[in-house]
Length: 311
Ligand code: FAQ
Image 1 (cartoon, rainbow, N blue to C red):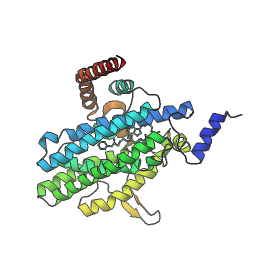
Image 2: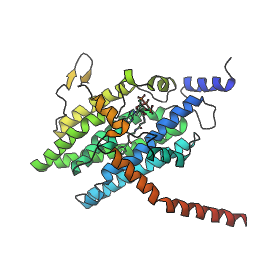
Image 3: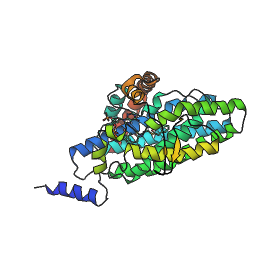
Image 4: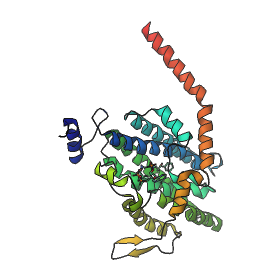
């Protein structure tokens, strides 16, 4: 016989209602969510680095203000998501320790370098575009705090995507050199953006269970296809070529066909051997160590305040 709390859990999922922090949940459900939400939080924090690199070199005050706001939003998303992970019983300091020791993952995409200012635009257009595609369905994820966090995060990601596309539109109206920069950045980010959606469905060990629990609402391949279909017309409007000779509309499927993704490259990047893995983690570790005094000062202040209220 099923215990009543497990029955309640199953019924909640079945009715498309939300599981909340104090509800009973299977240990595997909790573990899966901690894994996904922590990876997502780490991605936001590590994801500040490729673009953050350009803040001091933005070509105008306006571009600098926009970029600063975007990178700060990413910090906010990270903190928001760490809080969601804490509602599942995870410890924030422990999650950070796992990130900087390489025991927990973050998105493969942030292990590629941002070489020119056009990369800032292309990251907004393609990386945030892919993030939105993946995250809008997560607003209906079965775990309440994660689903609610996604609503605000998606609104901000839409702004990020638009700022990137607008930046690229501006560059495409500029000089030949600027147009070449946009095309070059598009060539470098296109395939890694497709890899963000994760391994193909036949090689995705977590999808089936996460779909049954309604943590995930679509498979990796479904979302990847949606992203391709959405992005091809945007590339045409922009006037850039996506670097895939096999990309073409398939009227029978009602979708764009596209070429084979280099899954060997994906595996290399995820296992720590991408172009910037070491740099990203080293930077994160240094920031953590150099911020130790801030955490200690905040804790000392909180202790003093608590002692004062007890007096
Ligand atoms: N990179 O069985 P599945 C952003 C791992 S957006 C690295 O399919 P799952 C915004 C996966 O964890 C980026 N690892 O796994 C921004 C698993 O490993 P594990 C963050 C990957 O969880 C924009 C293994 O492969 N977004 O930050 C990747 O069902 C611009 C097997 O895979 C999210 O995290 C990858 N690309 O599906 C910020 C969204 N893909 O843990 C700054 C939420 C898979 O078993 C600038 N997450 N792996 O050792 C998800 O939707 C899912 O977790 C997936 C993966 C779809 C990413």
